[in-house]
Image (tube, rainbow over the protein chains, first blue to last red):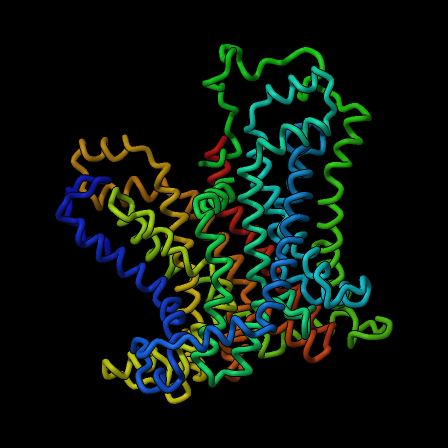
Length: 285
Length: 330
């Protein structure tokens, strides 16, 4: 596999001779990665007849009607709004509760500190699939929150908490203490220090965990599938239902899917650096 | 740019007016590192931590515990839960061929995901780990499948794999291969492999990206020293670089394993667990039993089995594999 590069090639810079081979591999991996997505987007510009006659062809002529159908479909906008609200609530609760929990775990010294942190680490091992059926009963029967935004957002935030705390704590620990101590000596309260100093300083990490929570919620399927119906459905549910309902309308499904992908894709690509660092932090920590 | 790791010490600020002072000196007065926690501090800790603990308790821990309770009753989802049947649900789940097949599918996916994505991911990451034009773009594009929702990726691939008119069949026909009549997702012997292929496509980018990030932390001197000693590119990678990547690889394997055990979305969209239960996973099994058939006791028992398998595998992995990392860190 890796024998493409000849032996004794300088390690990191890579000999000039090796570069074409590397470029080919890079291009191949990129093509496979984005190929299906690009194909989906392109086929959204074709008619079903075009697709049927030549599955792998390019649009000719280019047609916009699949996309205009999606964009003028009130259901699409309703699903998008639901996804947006649920993701925003999830993010707000997960990041808020997460940074509040991470702060004492990073700054106070108390006997139960490490065991408490372990609770969050172990929380990583409680995945949604395991809890889903009782969760469904809890939310629909006991809390009467089925088919509401909060009914989905609160459990999602709870499941996002472990990774949030695990990423935030080391970040908070590494912030310089001097500012906080100076403020304490000047008579600021702990809460004031947290609010005015720790929070603003940890903004980069908050954005990382925030984006993770947001995209996690935006993409989530299992919990909305069980809890949301009709007009409350989120985009993934809408996409899945649309594709079952109109499975013969390949072009329409692909256009719908492509448009539904864009928000998360744009958000993620814009903040890519932070996310990778966050994931890496989680892997290291 | 980089997030500090757990052991990171605060930087002695370069632009700090008084950088000479050692950061760890115990300070007089209200040092946050004080020995005793006062009642006030204890109150503050409780106030800070309780929202998170309440959420975690109510929506994460309680449902898992209540799955245990549910698993001991025959319960259809309404009325009081009073028909105690002991371990009968477990007997029924563990002797249900559909469930044992689901467990097998999960384990196959756990093993294959690592066996396929790790060598592939490593090879690509090692090759891409060099200065070249457009590296940032390449990394971004490789990450795209991971960013998509599993549902969206599933719907796209479902369309690509539609028998006859789908592009996969079209391309295969173009090179003279006859695709299966029922399509890849509709043929029991092939469906799991088709799902596996889509999962590889979806998650390979994450492996590559994490490994590339791990490679960034291999110091330049290592390469120089190896080169001075006359090591070939291949020797350097295999004997030095890959071992240094150990922690990243082991943690990635762990994440991949946990993810494979929980697999639901992709299967649900691609095949719904079919055809003829050829792609059921534990998660699709328990959702089908619980919400579609109203067998809450069975679903509870399946949840507990899934949880136990996950915890046992995580504990074994921790003991056998990850412990080395924690020991190394000391």
